[in-house]
Image (cartoon, rainbow, N blue to C red):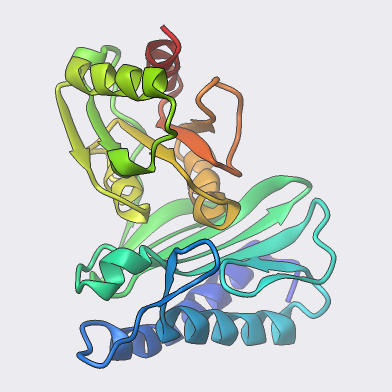
Length: 263
């Protein structure tokens, strides 16, 4: 399925929503088993089942296109164009019954994310964007446009969200700078995984800072950033959406954060 991006996005949203019952069947189940991958990160049957379902859908509709997924790696030959799939973004939260996890999928073309979809099954919320389709939020059938960033120009007025201090690199100097950064902001909270980006894209938070992220975490959020007047960079301020570190927000606020991390 190629060509019209609006049609492609609508099809993809239906496919992702069709995965909701699969994921929710495992969510808060007393029989849910959490296994460990070689890198010791958690994985469940829900992660595997959702990714398998989405891969089958992509292989039928977009035959021959490469896919990079969290659980089953790369299929095809990813060059500058491919799909990314994160079946359960926030497996730790999922396995403990917290509703902040999401299903993430994106299309990268020419080295840039051009389509992104983030679905929060337990919250009934979907975020989406594609070329020619304004970034939107759909919540229980109600459609609205995602907001541009607030006109916040000072860290002292900013709401900063982050994925948690434990994921930060062991370099003590960088950790100390990050802690000082949180003290400079009006409010800081640890809203991990895609959930923090949801509140930033709704316009209620100004900055999201993450460490330890992968391409399948960031590609859909990078597409949403570009469509809403935001940017995504690494800690050095270079445009980046492949991890492991990222700063997300308005261009001016991202510059403030980068300066603080390298002060």
